[in-house]
Amino acid sequence: MKNSIAERVLDFLIKYPPFNLLSTQDLFEISKEVSIIYLEKGDTLFGKGDAAKSDFYMVRNGGVKLSHTTLDNTQEIINISDAGDVFGIRPLIAKENYKLSATANEESIVYAIPINKFTSVTKNNARINKFLITAFATNAYDPYTAEENGKIFVDYLPNSSQDIVNFQTANYTKKPITCHLNSTLKDAAIKMRDHKIGCIIVIDDHDKPVGIITNSDIKNKIATGLFPIETAVSNIMTSPVITSKKDLTVADGQLQMIKHHIGHLCITKDGTVNTKLVGVLNHHDVLATLGNNPTVILKEIKRANRTKKLRSARLKANSLLKNYLEQNIPVNHIVKIIAQVNDAVTVRAIEIALKKMPTNPPVKFSWIALGSQGRKEQMLFTDQDNAIIFEDVSSDKYEETQTYFLELAKLVTKSLNKVGFEYCEADMMASNPKWCISISQWKSQFEDWILHPDEKAILLSSIFFDFSPIYGEDALAEELSDAIYKALEQTSIFFKFLGRDAIKNPSPLGFFKQFAVEKSREQKDLFNIKNRTIMPLVDAARLLTLQNHIKGINNTSDRFEQLAILDPNSKALYHSCSYAFKALSKFKTKQGILHNDSGKFIDIDSLTKEEQLKLRRCLKPVHEIQEVLKIRFDLKNFM
Image 1 (cartoon, rainbow, N blue to C red):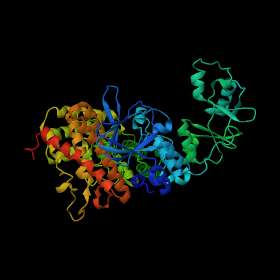
Image 2 (image 1 turned 90 degrees about the vertical axis):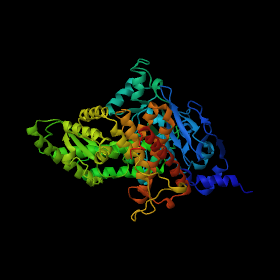
Image 3 (image 1 turned 60 degrees about the horizontal axis):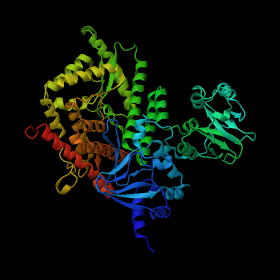
C-alpha cells in the first residue's frame, strides 16, 4: 500500500542537507518514521535545560526561533530556523540537555526525525558523517554555546575541497610512548618530560591500552594535592580509552574525537581494547592532515612572506566559505570566521609592506577598514575601502609624514589587489591623500560632514562611519570615534539627512507583492538584493546606532541586537531586522558563489519556490524599518 504521507515528507527532505546526501530508498525509510508537529505562534518545542528528546527537527513551513535567557533575564534570539533548516541535533549526539529554547516564531509545521532511525540508516554514509562532524564541531545547531565559550575557530572543520583527504587513512603515531599499569605517576611524568609529549598511554602485561594520562590529569590531580606524586598511574588515568582500527580515515577519527570529547584515539590491532596498542591519533595529527581550516589558514597567512602566498591562503578561505554554506552553518559563524581571515590578510599585507619601506613609520598610525570590511560583513571578494589616521605632527613635518604613509598605502593596496580585493573605483583608499591624514584633520573632516551635511557629505559619511581599526594604534581610532559622537551632540539635521538616505531605495516589493526588478537594459528583470534589501538595513542600523550613541558595534546584525536591548518596545522589529540581514547576506553570498560574481543581481525566476518564499519573508522587516525611520525622524516633509 502506498504511503502518501511518507512520500510527501521525502519530497521535501530530499531538497535539503543532510537528506539530499541519501539515496531515495534510505530516505524513504527515514521518512516513514517522521512525525509531523503543528505549532501555533509562541508554542515551545523544547526549553533550555530540558532533557534531549529522541528526535531532531526540520522546519517544513513557518519559522522556529532558538533563544536563550541572558544574565540580565532578557530573551536573546540566537537564530531563526526557516523551511529546510535542521535544529536540535547536537544534544542528541553529545547526550546533553538543550542549551537553547525552541519556540514557534509564527504558525509552523515541523518534522520530528528519530535520531536512532537516522543514524542506523546513515551509519556507513561518509558524506553524512562529514555533515554531522561540521554541525557538531561548529555548534551549528547550538550557536550560543560556541559564542559563550568564545570559540570561533574549531580544528575539526572539514572542507569540501578536502574530501579526498578527509577519507584517506589517518596518519597516526606508530610508536606511542607508554607506561605499565604498575608504574608510578612520577615515572610516567619523567617519561613524558623526556619525550616532550603531552600524554602517555597506560598498558597492561599484554600491551593492551587500559588508560591515558595527560598534562591536564597531572595538573588537576597531582598539582592540586589530590594524589601524591608517587601514586600509581591507575589512580589518575582516564579509563577506559577510546580505540579504533588501524585503517581508520581522517573523517572517522574526527567523528570519534568529537563524539567522545577527546583529543586522542588509541589505535589497536583489531580496533578494540582487547588487542595490542599499535598507535595513537591525536587532533594535531588530524589538523596536519587536513591543512585547510580556519586555524591553519590563519597560520598560513601569518607566515606568508609574499603576496602570492597571501593570495593562496585567502583563496582557501573561499573554499571554506562555500563548504560552510553547503553545510548550513549559521551565517553569524561564517561572517566572524571570514572577517578574521580578511583582517589577518590586511595585517600581513601591511607587515610585508612595512619591510619594504626605507625606514620605520615616523609616527604612530592606525590603518582602518571601511564599508563592509569595517562592519565585519565582507564574505566574498569586494573592492577595497580603507584609510590611514596618523598622529599629529608640526606643519613643517606634515607633508613628509603624509608622503611616507601614502607610499606605504600604495604598497598595501597593491598587495590587496593582487590577493583579490579590487581597487575602489571611487578611490576611497588610504593611497588617496584625502583619506591619509592626521587625527586632527580627520576630526575636522567628520565635524564638517556632521555639522554641514549635503548629498556628498552623506555619501562619504555612510562609508566612513563604519570604520574599524585593523593595524597600528587603536587609540587613534578611538579618539576619532569620541570626536564624532561629540559632534553629533551638536546637531539633529544630520540624522534627517542620514534617514533620507536610508529610505532612498524603493520598496523591494512592487505591485501585487511582486519583486521589484530592475528596468535598465544591463540588469533588466533582475532583482538588486544589495540595494533594495541589504543596504537599507545597513543604513538604518547605522543611523539608529549613531542616534543612540552606541559605540564599538559596527556589524549590522549586532547593531540591531543591541538596539533591541535598548528599546524593548521595538524589540521584535529589531530582532526581525537582524535575522533578515543575516539571511539576505547568506542568500547573496550563495548566489555570488553560484554565478561567480558579487551576487548583487538575482534572476528571481531561476529560484525555486522555497527560495523565493524565504527571500520574500526577509523583505517585510526592510519595509517596516523604513517606515519607522520616516516617523521617528519626520522624513515625510524632508524629501
